Picture 1 (cartoon, rainbow, N blue to C red):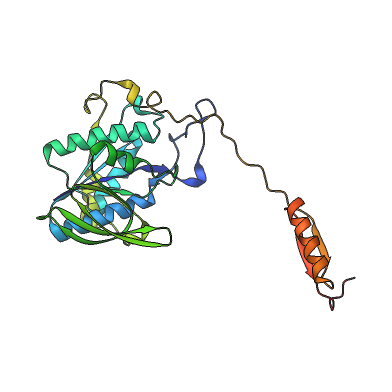
Picture 2: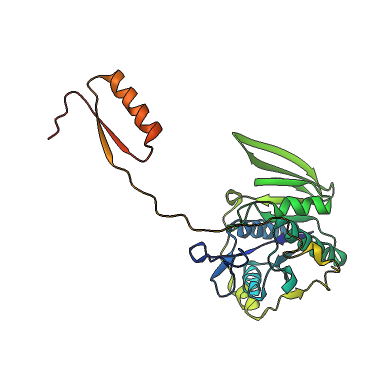
Length: 282
């Protein structure tokens, strides 16, 4: 079985900076981590490998510093890691990102067919959850989103049964393979890296593919040119103003209710305190 895990290196949320000229996130020199949801996807892939055999390949798109994230995946137990990196990929939105990763997954599958593509449910920075469905659409594979449990996997029958979270409950879904699965944090508890894997990771050099390696000859599909999403303006919200406190006499409940509704409708920042008839205030 061959499982591909798509991860993203995201900036530490306390250190996010925006380029005022391009309105894109500044990643160079910013402390970064593997997107938390993606760590759970990687853990699930390694567990499936341990149960059924096979190999796990990790892929990401990003700048050169994303090699650190890929080495970390090796320390957890991934077999191979691939970085899609090219200056022309910079500024990509979810559409352009899914295009480049799609090309990478097709190339990975040429050497060994892919049975499963696992991703985190959403990224910590963009928080859109659009890249995995975009990959499923381009690949023509079923997509199983918000999965918190894999119940059955039958490689001979080419089928998988999962539990996925939906509003107000859960669904149990059966799908054919290959398919795309997005994992929630409830699916597992990630392991700690083992010492042998940490030693291997320290020496490991991820494979790097640029647009030429991926067979991309149309720059209008990648980077800023391939991104129809436009951020017109970015700004930091100002400090929230604290309103004054108003005391309402609660001796007449009907009058107090009317006054309370009026205050909440027209002065939402006010802190309202209702005093009962027995309260005394100086």
